[in-house]
Length: 466
Ligand code: ZN
Image (cartoon, rainbow, N blue to C red; front, top):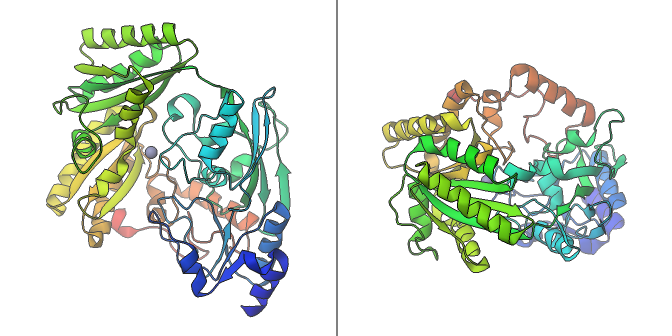
């Protein structure tokens, strides 16, 4: 251990290697378990990252990349590993307005990148609640989703090029800036969403879009689940491709975010079966506003919505989004377990009823709060329950998904927390291929080991959930 630390200090300077008790003092995240790393290192260049990986290999010590540490599946847990922090690799390197591209270092915080891009009159369409802490490297490694996937896709859809350090220290610099490039395997896709298990993302080129000049936002009340899918189709069709968010809230969520101690207050009476935050982004404030009002009126006439509040100013728009973003309220009554399942919209109502019934039988005191990116087929389920009942809660949430062609993770990833349930969403053949890729790219199992897949020889399947 001493020799490893000496090597790291020689490579990075002693200021950038934190070890022993100082590590736990230097890092803390309220969102995720980080474990006890043997050292926290802060490289400032891709060459230094490669140097750290080579040293880690020499001393058979795992490396766990750390971005904003706001993930929700223990993907950054670094027990006994070198925690590789990107805090000194956080630069916006270049914005090319003509090509509409952004080049960043992996530690660049999403909000910082968005501001820099908007100052150039362009738009980086990625957006999520952790925008002030999530790093682009972490978002790429986890293929983060968020609030505007409906229109712009997941993080994967905005990545044009990547630079990655492999497990043997090789640097793959594939900083492509072209929208179309079919020259052989698209290697970047291997690393996007691999949660740092196949390589470490150090830099990236992202695709930018024109900055929308108009934003229309409304909160609508809906009486019955069956109206949600036709409402989504109507908005997608009539808003001329502008629909950018369709965020549904079940009544329990709406109540939590509109009553003290939450800062929000009801903008629609608490009388509806569902509340949906609808957003459209466009290029013409006047025309877009007229179209938005017309479409919502039509939805009202067709009986798809029962009531609507349309934001008349940026402050009103922010107030509506603040309700949707105040996810922290779901934890105010005690410990919670959070889920990000995906399934076809048509099956959601039955699925939620099923989970509710199973929980009521098994854990009568458990609470269930549901909201999410309905337009993406992605629901967040928040279960308030004793942490000791975790396995029962997970079984109630995950077990019905296999027969619904659903997924145990629509956007948060697998990390450690969902590893035992991966087989509910991926076939044995798919998991075997994942293992083959991992063995080929990281034969020593040193890159974020144990995340997504258990180490060689261990079982992944949680029998309780099969
Ligand atoms: Zn989400």
